[in-house]
Image (tube, rainbow, N blue to C red; front, side, top):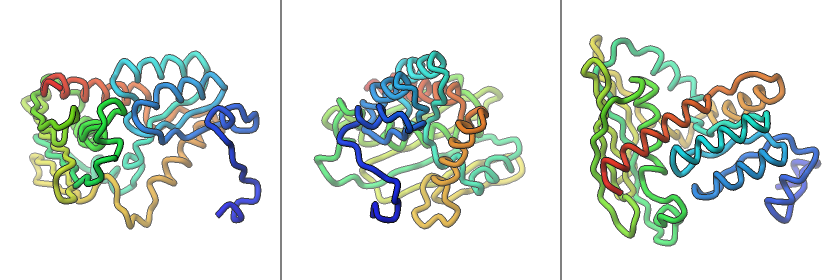
Amino acid sequence: MLSAYREARLCDSYEQLIEQRDVDAVYIPLVNNLHLEWTLRALDAGKHVLCEKPLGMNAVEAEEMAAAADRAGKRLMEAFMYRFDPRMRDFVEGLHDPLHVNATFGFHLRAPEDYRFQASLGGGALLDVGCYVASVSRWIMGEPIDVMAAARMQGGVDLTTTALLAFDGGRSASLWCSFESPEEQEVTVIARDGVHRRDRPFNLLDDPIGPYRLMVESFADSVLNDRPIAIPLAESIANMKTLDRIREAARF
C-alpha cells in the first residue's frame, strides 16, 4: 500500500507524528474520549486539526478545544463529512418553510468488544450516530428552545435514544438513533410546500461524489489559503450543547 505513496513514512507513536516539523495538519479519528487530549496536543505542537465527530464528549470539551485553537492560531474543524455532500446541501438549501423534521440513524452493533459499548470511551448511540440527526435537524431548523428525550440503556451506554426538539414558531423535530436496529437512515421534512425525503443522508457507502474527499479538500483550502473553515467551531459547540441537553433530558 505504501509503495503507491513514495514519500509516505510511518511513525511509531502519536507523539512522534505531531513532532514532525514538515507535518502541517493532522486528522484525529480516535475514540471519542481521546479527541480532547490529542486535539490539544496537536494544536500545542503547531498543527492544524481535522477531528472526527463528535468534536468532544460534551460542550465543555468542545469549548476548550475551540479556545486552544484560537490561542494557537490554528484551524480546527469537526469532520462531519455529510455536510459536504452536494446532494445533501441541495436538499437542505432547497427547503422552504419547514414545519417538522424527522431524522433517523440506526444500525445493529453486534461486537460486544466494540468501544461504542463502553461509556468511558465515549460510547453510546447518541454520540456515535445521534450527533448526525441532531446536526441535520439544527441545520434545517436552527437552535431548539426545548428538548425532551428518552433512552434505553445497557451497560452504562444508550442503545437507543429518542428526542423531540421544539423550535420557535411551533416547529419541531423528532430524532432517533440506535445500535439495535436494522440499517436505517432517513431525513423527512414536512414543509408548507410538501414532504421532502432524503434516504441514506449520512454515509452513502457507494457514494461516487466522495464527501470525505470534499471535506478534506475544503479543510486543506482553509489551511493553505487562510480561509474560514466550512463548519465553524460555534456550530460544533452548539451541536454538542444540543446533545448534552438530550442526555440531560433522558437522564443518562
